Amino acid sequence: MYTIEELIPQRHPIVMVDALERIEEGVSYTTLEVREENLFVEQGHMSECGLIEHVAQSAAARIGYLFLQRGERVPIGYIGSVNHFRLERQPNVGEQLTTSIRILQEVFQVSLIEATVQSGEEQIATMRMKIFLEQ
Image 1 (tube, rainbow, N blue to C red):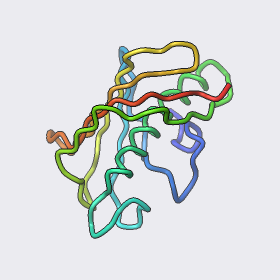
Image 2: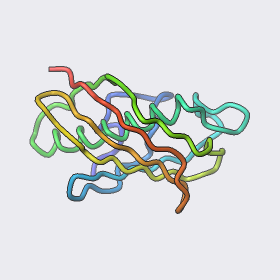
Image 3: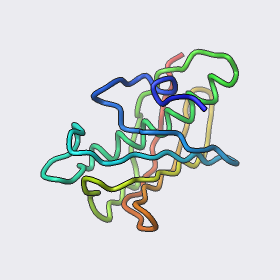
């Protein structure tokens, strides 16, 4: 397995994924421990923007892995839109998040994903995101 820095273009202090855990049948899984020093943590909680960035980087880790497996350069992606965002609660410092990314549609350089962020068995947030890859 690759390090997260090999899979995504972001670098410290903006890295929002600790590891790509696995990919199976159109779904990938990443993890992130919410830390106090995280740029998106305020007053002991991760912000909504932090969750959105975490999901985007989780999707990027999947793409990076697939491209590296084919011997290709990891592309840069851009968030095109975020829809159906539902936040149950903000995660706290010290929580371990597990995020699933399900591919709903891929056409050319555009992916539509559905993400679920969990802490243990508790669902924290869900959203859909459209991501454009740089050619």
